[in-house]
Image (cartoon, rainbow, N blue to C red):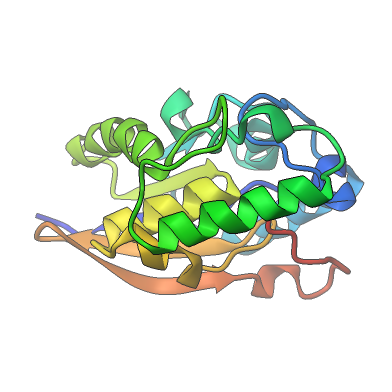
Length: 213
């Protein structure tokens, strides 16, 4: 079996990222001007790779991030399973002091191994893993696709890479990310290895900030 190269990126910046608001899965925002520049910079660096397929979430910000590639005719599939984790009622608004306390509690529970813990009307890491697994089984089953680009979201990326690397989700925050950051994984003989992690060298000429929400 040939090695499968999986390139996983986070979407470009949105105005919600810029303001520090949580988007999650219910806020279907557009890329802002910086986000579009980030998408173009990634395309300029990686359009030499013959991607066989592009996979995105259902949300516009991922579609817009890979638009320079899809405009060249590369087949694309959108999957709800690649959506960002749902953060519940705190999505799309300015965060309060209580939100910060709730988030610290959330991280404590996850780092303690309670992967079913979630905010009200939100998702847990285990919820996200279940839907991501279905998508990854589909992607890995397409053995003719040797170079695959996946565009997803911040927390979803942490969970996905942790799961693919067979790491406990309590350690997911080791997989840092920023807007349009790249993780390049190689899959062979049933195992993944990381070639590039949180790589943003393609953004060196763009003034940007790291956003983790």
